[in-house]
Image (cartoon, rainbow, N blue to C red; front, side, top):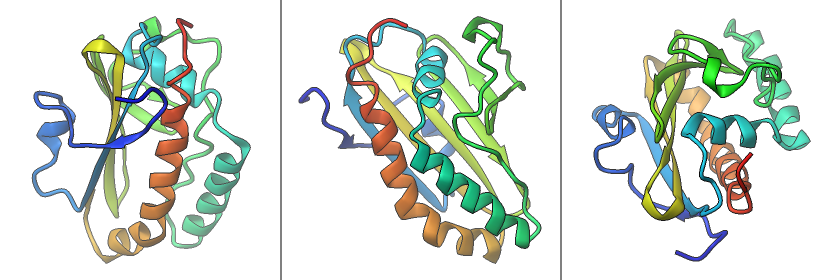
Length: 173
């Protein structure tokens, strides 16, 4: 795999994310070579998300305003993390920015959020030889969830690829 290239792929076999795929309305997975990323999956997520580009946070602000009109919750900004809290202090159930921590191991972390219209889960999974994959799985509950996904799907792909590219040059944090 070429260093820095974001490759569409399937959820890693045996990953927790792969178990969530049945019945999903939407899912995708992207992989990148990140040989310098010899930290745990949660540390990797925290480091990359802490460097969220301003344009992504502006899109999140727009998203929060628009969904507020429909009575859905404001998630805040993607990069809004408790900077003083190290990865080692997070436990399953804790909020990690806009998501809740669902599953935690050295090589994979599941983060998610649920609302009346959909459930979303994001997996950051480390593989041998320095590959990192990000899998997103969405289960919708109603027509509002399907409507929500129309503009979110193409934006999501751009955001995930942008954020994943940040791991290519990552060295131990």
